[in-house]
Length: 487
Image (tube, rainbow, N blue to C red; front, side, top):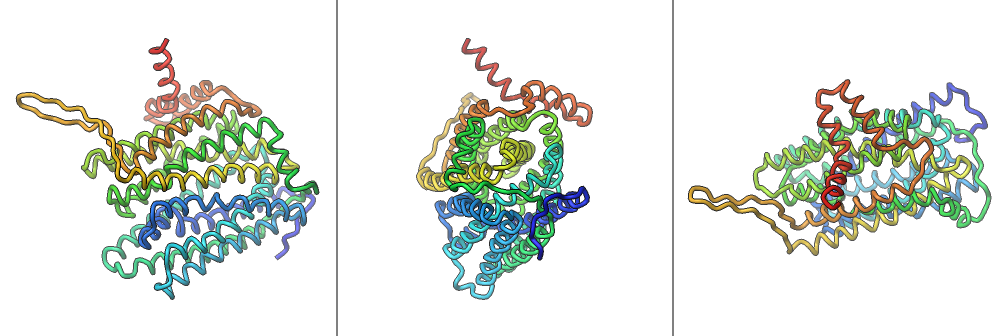
């Protein structure tokens, strides 16, 4: 396995490398689908995990980001980003195999503590691989095509997620209903399959070429000061940190809420997740094209308010006991979530890559990941503690109509347990969004201009353009109404 970088890459080598990166992305998506998300939460709950442990599982992917300092040291020492990324990727995916084998062949030894122990190594080596991979891919992908390429890659991985997650969810629910004694074995096999697929993806990644780059041989902590001395990048760090803190205080508990409070099966939960994924697939390329044409910051300013609206909508799920009413509301939430997160995730990735100087990309991106990971990992732990605190508390606001022939009570707000977290997350996310104005991006276009262009584009291709166009600008309309009333 030749992992040496090349001084110059031909166009043919670049195109081949881009295809291989997509291949590894598909393998990584299959691996994370089988061993993460709702399936990991379901396995943890089966093993008796508490709210704090659920929060710990959610925080681990970012909690280990401090290890990215090791990645900077390795890249500076060997000037070989591909070797660091590939070897650490392979080491990261081995613990999944071990975890699955223990749960399958030694079921009496399986526990939530054991799962957490092995996942530490999975996320640790994955974090070390991350900055090297980001810097490597930044140089491999032509900048003018970055938005289109990553949106295409994202649409492929999301399509795979849709097919795989639904198939596995139906299988798991079938086994739970008919062979409940084999439920833990099913999750164990999923971990083994995920590990095998992930390791295969690591070997696919090893065949992608790397353009040679050199990292300055300075003190590692002095290197990390550079991103903090760059005012614009520092503003991006402030916004990104506040944003991920607001989101992660609540999002890890959406699945727990649906399982424990609403009593939904995995098939329903994965089905809603697929609905969200489909909306992301159908819109991510549109977001990518507009991000390339205008700016990533503008796309965030449009899509983030939609996501905040979804947080608020979560507070109304479960007010009424009718299953279909809750499912209808959940479907709307997941549709808008899929549309908005496609733009947010794509743009947050691209703006970090765009604002990082070429020669110091690995340093800037590592600093970004390390700093944001602190807030991203603390938030679920705080969320778990708050979930336990709010467990015995509730807030209800009702409207009651009384008459000679009709007595009717309308539940307006009913906050309890996890709903408090959802409202808190919405408030914090709204506060974080105001920090986006501090960030400056080359080619930035005002949000109102892009909204008009997007509305015009959507009108020409979608029958529901009126609805979507108003969704894109609801945040501005709401602010205008508030200003009008207070003036």
